[in-house]
Length: 399
Ligand SMILES: Cc1cc2nc3c(=O)[nH]c(=O)nc-3n(C[C@H](O)[C@H](O)[C@H](O)COP(=O)(O)OP(=O)(O)OC[C@H]3O[C@@H](n4cnc5c(N)ncnc54)[C@H](O)[C@@H]3O)c2cc1C
Image (cartoon, rainbow, N blue to C red; front, top):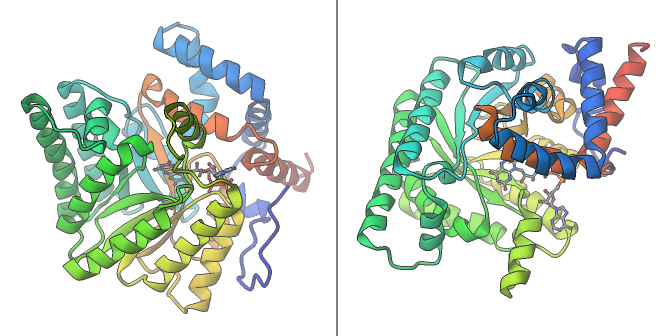
């Protein structure tokens, strides 16, 4: 089930080493993980569970939370609050892996709730500053602003005075987060979202990069390479930054909203911003990695993917270009609970690698969990590999 390894893979990296990937998992933990991924490979169960689970959690049905907490939440989430994340941070640290804290707030509305998200995000920055294995936090602008406001800004519609005030509050919130992060030497990764909000998000993140990335890369934007315009945008952003004396931070992902994007484009009758096929996405993703590696002195980048070939490709570029493996501008990252065979083998080989560790009350992280479960349904994709590697490790242990 593994993706074919790229030809001429001269890098001394073996993602098949399951002993390293699962070395701190007990036999029973391994069995539980196997069962969970096996369940998630059933598309109908995931589709049904997503609808019922979302309703049941929102309706506060008493029996649901304990089930979610012990299963999918435990696999993919660090805890219900910041302090709960410590065991996950410690476990990753033991595997030479860094943690990026990700407060699971999205689609928030109401100024008080948005202020609360900002305060919670600043607390994460402060915890990161006190812990050498937490160099960064991640944030979503849909947790710091109303979706409706971002949508309006995206379409460059003029704002009424109340909306203008709320826009200024949004800028103030993200500025406070970035400013505290700069002061404490922590990085801020801003997630990419749906295209109908992303123009507004990019504009704000560009402003933050221009302000805070003069000495160091504090702020990272996210480039979704499933979009056909993002490789060009990465290069254009880099050129603007060079001219204006700052550095860009680029977290490279393929993109999480493909179906939603295509559906909306079809319904509204515009051209989908998503590439027509996976091959085009993979090509742009790897070209972006190459561009970032070739310009690593002025771009801080994060190869944020579970794709084996892209991870191997970045490792190979680092070697070919003679870049120090542990340069602070060159990073790999996977999501907590997924692809430990990539993360821990990269860490073992001496690369900078981190896990995104989301946390938050169960109700808040449900949309994130649904995305992870849906991403894992295809037996030909990530879940197939997870099952393959867990089975291999169980056999190796004689189980
Ligand atoms: C650390 C980290 C942070 C992330 N942050 C974000 C974020 O801020 N915003 C965000 O949107 N996503 C984010 N993601 C999710 C990411 O965008 C992908 O959805 C996910 O990682 C799967 O892609 P992959 O590269 O890991 O694996 P792969 O299995 O190689 O790629 C799967 C992806 O390829 C694309 N794809 C699949 N089939 C097609 C097709 N037929 N046509 C076009 N494209 C196709 C889709 O993007 C799909 O998700 C993040 C992922 C990681 C690991």
